[in-house]
Image (cartoon, rainbow over all chains, first blue to last red):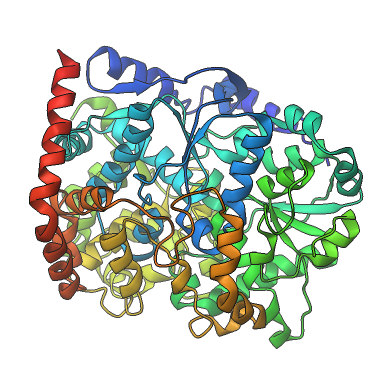
Length: 363
Length: 244
């Protein structure tokens, strides 16, 4: 499976040729800034340009990362934020782990309908402002936060009424509306840094990684909620792109597009849906590939895949695929201890067979 | 409204049909971006995980809004909207760029506001409380094996060792080794979050489902309001000074 931007690029050129709903949010933001309506939090320091839909270049900041953490990861899969910090430490990237950050509240919103757009957009803008006032580039660990912030940026740029309401709330906090120049997910950054990660990797770890076959799954809110601002075009490439660059043999499976079954509310109050959706995905993965691991970039999907394999025994299935985040793979490549530094012992589906195959000691 | 912002599909129905719920939904500005006519092609249904397991159809969501079909809308408002997984597969695949997921989101907001969500949100108290009192949506403490027996025996083991494991993992990362919230958000930060909910009218809405939560949040805010408002005023002065 190739992770060069090829078939996706055809899609981009097709869209360009058709001139079909080309939506350049960056140009709209610039116009609003000129009119004094918003401020843009510009990229600080070096960046790399990667192509998104319609051939638009997205600037991926390579340093000074404000770490917008994921509440689901910190609570449930803490090895993920720890790995995000780890690969930055190893590559000498400066980052800021802010205790004045809040959750984005989008999980709550999509699950319950509690809250409203002014609240949701104000929470987004308050977190954006934290990165701006501290002098860092806003970067996001969670896929639902990422999708939500892309959507909030779009709604704030396109709707003056919402913008004015949010500005009023922000003013009551002594803050102003500063929209980041780019909304960037951490997996996009790891992808942009793939050469550096490979160069700095432990050769023995790379040897182990080359023995692995994997499939990938992307969070729906990574590419379906707002689908024109992710690296690669319509279909995401960043997780598999990073993994294959490090030597993993990536494999295709027919249900790659399907939602994992997290469902926001379903994972809490309706898990029979979650388990059933998972069974469809896992069955296809097993029958078509039977990989060494499932690679993910999303808090909810990582949770669902990791926690929902054991119970499939109830329907006579035996699944045992370790669920690994892109950044945990990067941390392992860079020499991280699998438990003490990559937190893989917080996963419920056993990771030990994978570590054995990679030749990594864990006790 | 300028000519270019007009949506011929929604404009036409708005003037002709629909009952109470329809009119409420149409007030949400997202609807104009979410409905561009429907071919009844079923691509959305074919890609919808909720449609695979429930009596729920994103095609029907778009159709009922285009038709202004109040009877079907009411059926959705009173239950079916809670089946949607909010995955946006319908939006991604629709050849007309409709978004049933966004329409459902607007409907969920209205269902909460109009007191129709009590049953759907049973079991949701802990999340709502955490958001409003800690600034986080999730905490390690919430993932008890009792609440998630289907996550298997390793959850029990993890649950009993999580404090030591987190201490080891987050050595040198202050604020990360907590179990009653995802990270140790500061009091000032939590107050800002509460103020956003208050100022945006969202807190009042919470009262339609969890009235006791509103009392808890308001008591919490009142306890620290004077101290926090001093800080906010300092911030306001700093912002004003930076503009000059």
